[in-house]
Amino acid sequence: MKISLFFSIVAVGIGATLVMDLWAFLLKRAFAIPSLNYCLVGRWLAHMPEGRFAHQGIGQSEPKFWECHVGWAAHYVIGVAFAAILVAIASPVWLQEPTIIQPIVFGVATVSVPFFIMQPSFGLGVAASKTPNPKLARIRSLMAHASFGVGLYIAALILSFILPAHA
Image 1 (cartoon, rainbow, N blue to C red):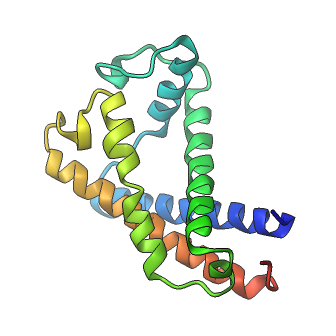
Image 2: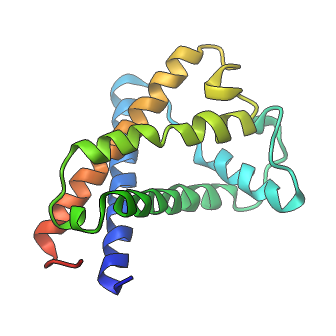
């Protein structure tokens, strides 16, 4: 992999994750809609070296040192990994000439990770089925991941204007 391709993927992943976070910030400020607490993601990850991968309720699990830092770092690393998967599917040419449909469809598809891995591991059930309002939780997750897909497109579009061809 060319170095410029690697850095392009990293930039797109970080940019898309930032758009997702800006969307969450807007929802919180304008409508008082809370977003995922990434400290709990860090707590979940920090319990894994001890062999604990699932929790009855992640909020009640033992807090871990640096869990917030770990959670936020993981959030951005996952965004970069998802960007790499999109580029592998779409081809590096997509970074030079981004289109909007692929990243939005891909962004929405990434909701399968929280639905089938994270939420059950946090004690929330498959697709938030054990939460007080599963339908609302699912809609919020879908909106967050759709915003990530839009962010993939926006970041790639900006990058395509800044950098010369890199494939």
